[in-house]
Length: 154
Image (cartoon, rainbow, N blue to C red; front, side, top):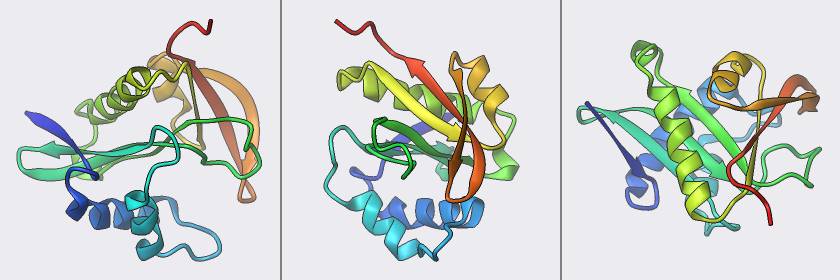
């Protein structure tokens, strides 16, 4: 059994998310957990939200919708970002649930297209209907750029 909450509804979760993201993804240039907390809790720039998935009453994963995520691609927005599930909780479909939660939030906000980048999880996203656009570089790291059409553009 799992549930999903937002950091806007539960700002106390922002520190947990920030610690996960800094530990898992790192931030060249030294972005600290405090800076990540500030970004999570900042007023949104368009439709933005951070979701936290719970297993019973324990937070075990996160994913977010962000206005921007790759500095080299300011033309693309918004982004599925920061998808993370604690190692001990992996293999239970939680990443899928988090991705679908972000997609549903974006769809409800009228977002027709989402973007993401990954260096390890392209097969996971492809199974969920995401399309590979091609290679990209983010902060000096080679990544795969992907997109997902949520609705038809008029």
